[in-house]
Image (tube, rainbow, N blue to C red):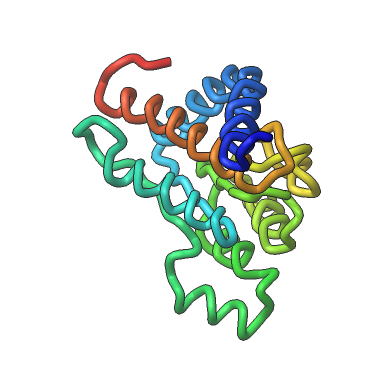
Length: 192
């Protein structure tokens, strides 16, 4: 009988292999992000729980660096200001915690990136809706069919799984692939 750990690794490998069709969209999204940064845009990220950690991870790679010493890129994670998040959750509703910030900050030329495994969280859906209303480009990192968030995304990187661990593992690969593209561009190297 197979060990549970072997089964987890097999599932991870299968999900990674099934993600091959996403690579063209990664290149497209990389070009969209480069265009936004070239025009002075800012990237805003958000998510809940582990997806909030992924959002912060992506922002960290852009403001810090991925693998090259280069200029920082303008990115903000909307889950990192506890005062703002708890104020909105308390005074309005938790469903408004991202949309209120996006409404205040995101403009045409900016990119708003939502990380979610199911695409069903009301605050994620509302955040993407606010981004669309403000004229920002929207990008969704999700799993499966992207849920109710999918129609609100100009671009979607959907992990071919409905299992939260596999989705989050693939999101890390995808955000690293985008970081490689952006890192190379900002350092004056060709990567795409």
